[in-house]
Amino acid sequence: MAHYGAGHLSNSELLAILLRTGLEGENVLAMASRVLAEFGGLSGLSRITFDEMCDSKGISDAKACQILAGIELGRRVASLTPEERVTITTPSDLATLFMAEMSSFDREHLRVATLSTRNQVLGIEDLYSGSVNAALIRPAEVFATAVRRNAPQIAIVHNHPSGDPTPSDEDVAITRTLIEAGKLLDIEIVDHLIIGQGRYVSMREKKLGFD
Image (tube, rainbow, N blue to C red):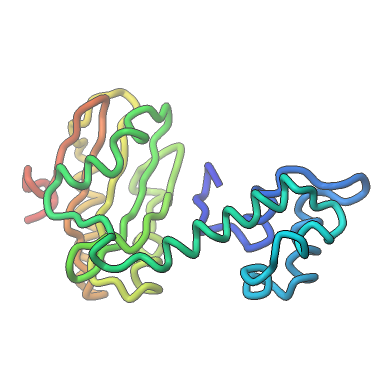
């Protein structure tokens, strides 16, 4: 999850993270797959009671609580009204959403926030980690979540572990390439924010790549 983002993991892998440990002779991933099959997938799991969960082999009270808490959090996020969703209207809004976590990373990460027509955040995906460069970044991956969600806009955010958020020539080139790709898909890039240590640069504000 740290390397690829939660969106890249299967249902079994996500459940395995909540379970944390398996049983003797059954690793946690196998256990997660069994539990999903036993309860009829995510749909069945979302309707299970605490007692029913504890009846499953290897599910302790603590594990049942972890699973049910995760399901309830997902349910509450899904039930948010549009008015409760985070809205991005300025680079500062975007920085507030990402800076606290991303300014502390010791490696580069690139994240994509999908936005509604009202600039409300629909979702966030951690797309690349380790190195953010033109050779690795594929427009198809950057826009994939927006296409799936039918989102008309995205915001791109990545960090500079050096602490200096000054955009490089490659940052500008990447931004320009992604903007052109977005035009073909009719998906607008509202900003590309670069986060440093306690500072950030909006490439749209600086008109870097946003010609």
